[in-house]
Image 1 (cartoon, rainbow, N blue to C red):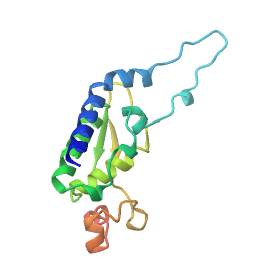
Image 2 (cartoon, rainbow, N blue to C red):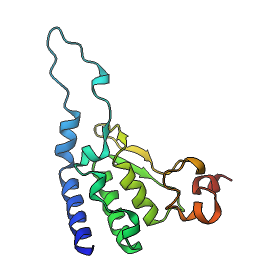
Image 3 (cartoon, rainbow, N blue to C red):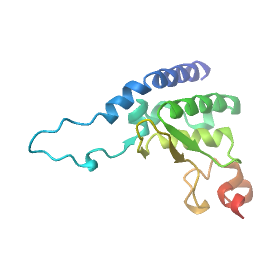
Length: 153
């Protein structure tokens, strides 16, 4: 597993290095012709996985990772998101393994990057009964209260 994670981190570093190229393709506005009207709907969002060029299936389930391995991958995920102008926001109580699960899950979510700006991406904003990561969240399991709700209570 260690070699696989090393290769995965190398792939994330490569995805980060291609961020300007991938974003320029996303922000490219089609040329207008005399009879065509440009609609902003033509530029809807894009899945994070499509944007960075990596799919969710490349990343192992969180159960296969140790805490230190999860931290390594999460650190690189942060760098990749930052390179693409995305700012992932987590609650303070979220552990590295839970963050990894959210990052992995976020690869299938649509984002709307803005050229030369940073877009906040809320990563943990669920009511406990609707949280897709409740099996992984230590706060939810031990206290039956989501970390976001606990902070506000």
